[in-house]
Image 1 (tube, rainbow, N blue to C red):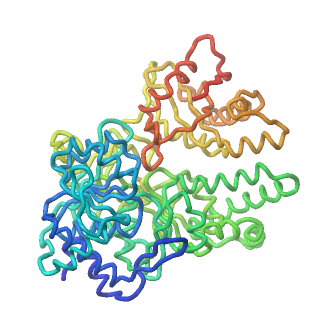
Image 2: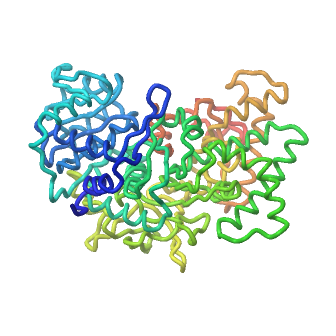
Image 3: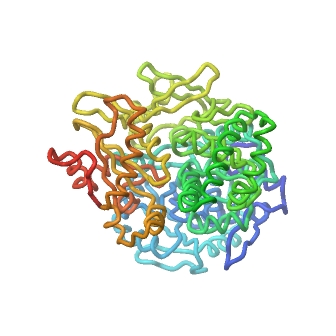
Length: 604
């Protein structure tokens, strides 16, 4: 058949693995299996159904649904025909959704859930090119009309394909595969054009460097609308012949992990941070002697993690201590993630080195990578035998990376996008004449090829004193404290730096109960003894920072940053410029001349 597209790559695996299990999905409280053969049949039937409905090569199909088997099936059916799909986040507002659908020229929308259906019907009048709705939930077996649009269920689409089976031909030169609109931290979304070749190159490199096998099993919980999950958590695992499980997403993740017992997990640092904070919270709430035992176990784990991350054997004494610490703490933690995880792949945002070291000490192997949607999306990754904590590893085999004179990371290779859809000027700014993609990230490459990300070029804070400050490093130091859930540094065009802190509410409330304090959350944040805890953490961080980059004031937020306020991207990165507007009253209070440097009691 030849690997000419993502669809042919998957269909080749269908021929190879036949009746073996390809997908798992939670249906009515139990897990149902889908074989490779059934997966392949449904992809082809869906493609035949789309053809019968008038979908052709080059047409645009949007997918607005949670992770479920129908997502990759409709995706691959579209790609089979040479169509271009446009994934959208469930959290996209009607305004954002309308902009993307109109900009991309979407004609078909595949969606799930009443909320998404209501959203699409609300904006359909402003989308003259939209011609058909495909309902991934149970729905009409025959075509019906919803508003002004014809609609058909997924089962109805497959049935239509069954009746019209002979009319479909696979695209021989598919070219463009998808337009992914970057969530970004600033500005209007831009449509990143990725070809089949872009993402195939990524899957080839990933399976070449990571020890994936056709015996692996992974739980898919990051949104498939994000480039990392789609390329790494879907196409790469399918290339390897692994099994994918679709549960209830992050809502039921702990339960799904315990039931499925995955061997590989693709995640963002936020997930690892939450696990780390869970352990830290247990330590904070523990009484003597349990707290002292946990302190000892964590110390031993950190030492072991340092050795394990570089594949060094543990010294005899440390090995004995580690076996005991494992019984006390780490064995239980591994059970939380299913007990069979061989390795985790972390991407989408920087992973704190101390948290990575903690996971190594807990008996996990963590391969941190780096990428961006415009690069397919993976650029580099730590790998077996070549792992260095605090870095994002060396470049993938087919990828070149260099550092520009101003420190910007530049990338070149078969994974780099075609450009931004309908935005030639933005494309020219991002990709130079020699096809180097300018990532907007600032970093370094050492003599062994390991890449370290130091900051976002456009996210630098420039104070009114003219100091250029990288905020992510400082925020990362602050978030090492289990009491701090999230931190957003403020200071652009201001005389000094301040920070908005979203506290770890369960941990802080537990500490309050431990000390006999019973108050409402907002009142609790006003209490001096608790504010002193955060001031101490801030002072500790300030001691290791240059004078000009020290944080002079802070505010504790009663309401955390949220996607509903558009303060977080779908991968949970803080949008600094949005926060500057949504939290303006709290920020202005931090710069009032009469205010104390440590007594900012501002709540959202």
